[in-house]
Image 1: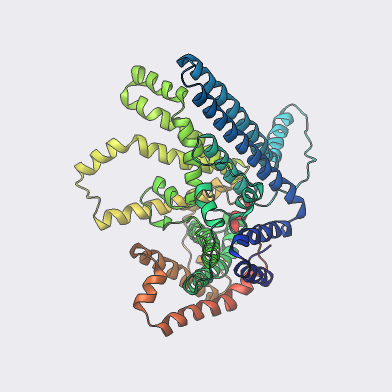
Image 2: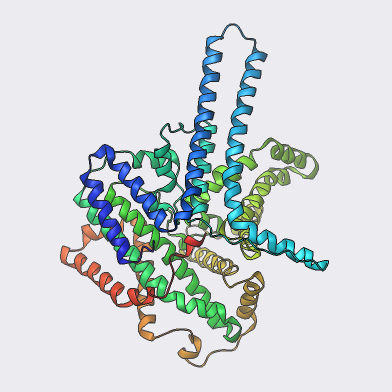
Length: 529
């Protein structure tokens, strides 16, 4: 279901009415029914896959917890009878049993994800190799990737690992875990929530709160403005630049790349604002996914501020397990002895970062462009880690103060430009096209003679004005967020009529610019992942 339609607003109206009318103990049933309904509207054939993931995860988690409790009870009952070696053997046997259950469930569900997302990519690579020998492998598989499979698979993987590590209790009711898996505000674009955080929100009783309703509605309106006015108006410009970059000047292509950075932020953070606002109306606190990412001073900091939940997931379930693995720690110790203390200290983290960022690239898309995108991000982060010592020494020699505003501005500007160039690499088409766009920016130095020549892909200057207004408002909001909630700040500093006027203006800008701009476009960009 496209959330930019009247039908979605009617869907929300029905949800809110039922949610606050039923007894509070049944509120989660309403959420489950509407979540499954939302998912079914995206395609009935998608339902078996999400049901399989939820139920297999529930069964594996329950088995692991039951095994852990039986082991604990067994050891407690024979506390004085078993030797230390016998107790250790019993624990090791139980751990192997639980690990097998976890691995089997992971293979099933991650295997489903990989089959849907990567089979065509793998067949294409195999066909390229076969072509070298005069052969051909036909790709006759035709299937539609289930809605939100990347997000709900990662969320259930996190839950399963937390139960295995003893960080979370296994849920007894399979329908509750199904709601956690299918909760519709986050099913298509996240955030990827942890069970311990989201379950407490989903299953707690909630009452209709006038203040929460007003603040949530305001945030939803702001999200619709960012998506429908800023992102959707920029989409036409960006698509034209990416499709025809070879005929534009380097400066025009560079401006198109900057437009893309603004577009994807307005698109993705706009969705988060809509869904976080909706959840605030429901009384549910959804994990935040953005923290002013374009004010970051390094690539590593940027990824702690952009798509926060994805970064946390990869850190907890990919990076740390690899970095702390015994084989990787042994590798670091060996490198310390043979190659020096500094090299050995950084090596385990470097290995973990390489795997993490290549996996992040593949998660975003099955193409060499996304693999290169992940690799470039990882290389910058690894290089910064290895150069931390020399970097600090250079700053001392040059007497650079970290708190100096000019230095901070340089860091922010540098990071934003790096992020922009990395972002466009997989989005133009193939990896060759992405590199071609880079080449066009750096080699075509002809200067445009007019604004029309500089921005030939712009529809009308009226739309350009709306986009610039929207970008200016997003920048202003990001600056104000350093002092706390912008809505709270407006309430304290602005008269009621002024606040009403601001939101009325946003509403009419959405009607005038956003509705026409959304007519010929699809949904949200991150829904493709």
